[in-house]
Amino acid sequence: MLRTVYFDHNATTPLHPGLMSLVPDWLKDWGNPSSIHWAGRGPKALLRDARSQVARLIGCEPLELIFTSGGSEANNLAIKGLLPERPVGGRDQILISAVEHPSVRKTAEFMITRGYRVEILPVNREGELDVDRFDDLLSEKTALVSVMLANNETGHLFPVARLAEQARLKGARIHCDAVQALGKIPINVKTLGVDAATFSGHKFYALKGCGALYVRKGLSLSTQIHGGGQERGRRAGTENALAIASLGYMCTQADRIFTEALRLRQLRDHLEKRILSEIADVQVTGGSGTRLPNTSNMTLKGVDGETLLMNLDVHGFAVSTGAACSSGNPEPSPVLLAMGLTRAEAQTSLRLSLGWGNSHEQVEEFVDVLKATVQRLRGFQHGAEQFYGV
Image (cartoon, rainbow, N blue to C red):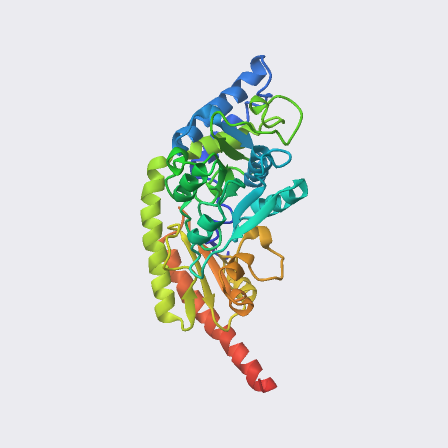
């Protein structure tokens, strides 16, 4: 059988081994957590415990959390829910970065139909946010700032705490999409100073179908899904108790987050060092900036990213050319284009995102296969250019 190695943890993560034995027991608690009879008590206890576990990890109070179906719903709820139906008092401006997840970008664009203006904060070629431009755009007209904590394609970290401090001085709300950061780096929403923050279970070795939105106590939030009174009336619909419980369990793994962050940074740095020294014409995208410890995005001149991905897949390596949410899109990554890469450069991109199950031996084997694959693909390209006289 073909051995498989997974290097695409920013797309999703495998289920944590510890959950394999817990999930069957949780399946026995099949009742509706809103029921007050015996069948609802078990699921309700799962939700209560998970809410406390997530809150403890990110530094908030349990009742400041709203469970959702995932990160995209949480981002929609945050942006639509924190803003009035129509601009009030001249506050009609929304600020987002040029590299936000589509669920933030498209939700912000939707708010234009409600009378808001969207201003885009640029990033440089290293993926760093233009904070001077942020300072110029931020004003008493700013209603909401929504900037991610960690970019899903390059791993670059943004100075959210600094942005939040400035936003508060202008009376603006600030939301942070922290989906990619959960489980990779320590997070404290109070230290960040944000009004709302988004998280997702399947990026942190939990089951799919669960997200969480932190909303600072005292803030009003307009519900976007109408129905029952679940989540204290802020998000209707029966909660996915099983997935929520799995996220809660993962949030008890705080000690391992620290140790794995150190190990994965060393592993990622070794991976990049070998590739840069052994394969010509490779550049790490945003390599000089502050990044997640597990993420590496690079361009390989003369190699089409999709072709490289398929060839590596044949050898059992799961990698990416960008965000999984954009798979099937023939256009180059909007994130890389926003960073100033040309279309040709962006089409040669390769994203590697390591995880808790990856080893030094897997990295060594991958680099060996990557070297041979790139050499072969570049040979094909060179032969084609000679044949056609390019």
